[in-house]
Image (cartoon, rainbow over all chains, first blue to last red; front, top):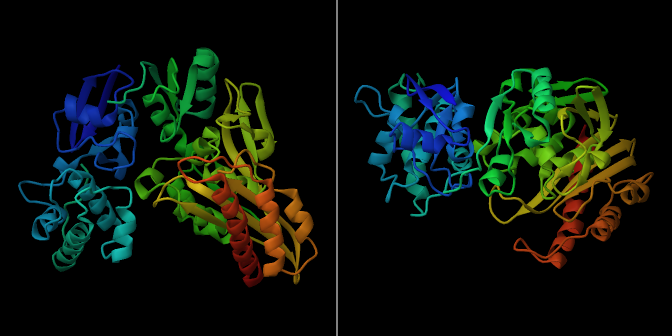
Length: 163
Length: 290
């Protein structure tokens, strides 16, 4: 079957099998390997991308289900060479060690800050509760997201548009 | 890599279209809503279908929460997140928000639906216990029209419902009765996990006394009855810890859990008792505040 969707603002059309999962479509068919493929059971959250502006676990969505919809991956966070404040925050506050959970963490964090620009620590913990970091780096991940929130409060940003 | 067996993907654009597709494709077709129960089962090859009919485009038609004075109607495509965030729903049935806070995680709640949860009919699933507690009815549509069944009839057994081939759950309806409130208590091994045991409680007050009560349990074996023994024990009595201890004992006696990796049968029976007491206490306190 043929599927067409918008990925990071670009329309893509591919011939796929109905059973292809969105995570494999993104990684193997589009070569966007920033999205990671982890537990394959919708537990770990490293495969989180946005579909129609909402974070979803792409190991548990069919590529066909994303047909006609708008997808944004971690590659879509950077705009014109400028890192999203969330990405910058992960650099500033050492929000990653091995980096495996990072794409999902950042996509979920971006969605949180778009909805709630000034989240409490508890709200951040709740937002990333569907993500697992096996380096146990949650404290620095939370600090990274807080850094981004503070940065955006200081300098309002307009990156955050999905297309 | 976990990949489903091959199937043909179809996308429905309306309820009528979905039913027409099911009629045409027969028993080898299955509907997929959020997909967070069905796709994992297909990836494990526990479920294999020749056709998968995607009904996510039906969210406009079946994603709704309508609250009136005597009834709440919720569309089957209403997502967990919408159930969690609806202030209108929380005002009349706070049990929904209690339960949704502890169902999976925020990202999964963006996709999973009420209808999908009920149709999965997992014995540990929380919304089935909520709907049992509230005495919900399920609207099932087919090419021949609509029929309405109670939760006891809907829930045939583990992973089995009254929804037959060519039929779909479109809506649930919950009666609103005066003086009522509700609550949900769950013990899980880690945040967002399936219940070790959950208990939902609804209480309707008549002045200072309890007029009626229902309890719905999850993860303690097949149980979709609302436990009439509890209503009998509580009716006409003022709320008290002693009374709720009696109700907890009745809940434990009607539980039939099995020992598994989530806990021993003994522990789960203890939880059925304790969580029923806690849920009844909270529901009663809320009903008295209202």
